[in-house]
Length: 147
Image 1: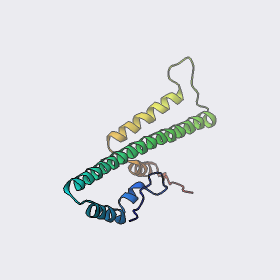
Image 2: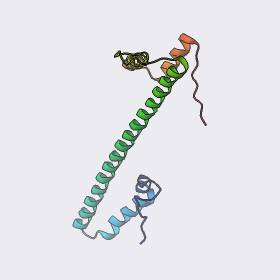
Image 3: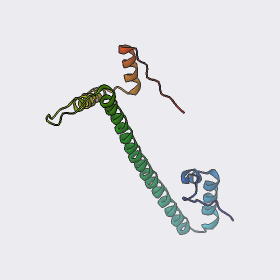
Image 4: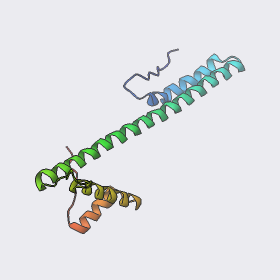
């Protein structure tokens, strides 16, 4: 009897293979065909339970790793936006930092933006809520450009 191979290194998702109906039917037939006695069936059931636990741990690890990667990318994107805003204020509006003072114009601006973000986050306002609020107060509509 030929069984479907579960290849975790394949481009296809391991979970798709594992949840494949043919694979489930083949495992069921393995249990029925090869298990002549109760001890063989129990041994096979224990092995299958181990596979399910490993699958759950792998899925959780993959989710945690994806969340961490998303957090890193979001931080990098956020820093990119702040750098562009800071450079625009410096180059186009000639905002400067005074080395003799603890607070310059740019530092003060970034602190104010950070406080506003914390304020709106504490009010559970999402991105779309803030876009709508900006439109309502200023008439500026922010629109994402997708390529």
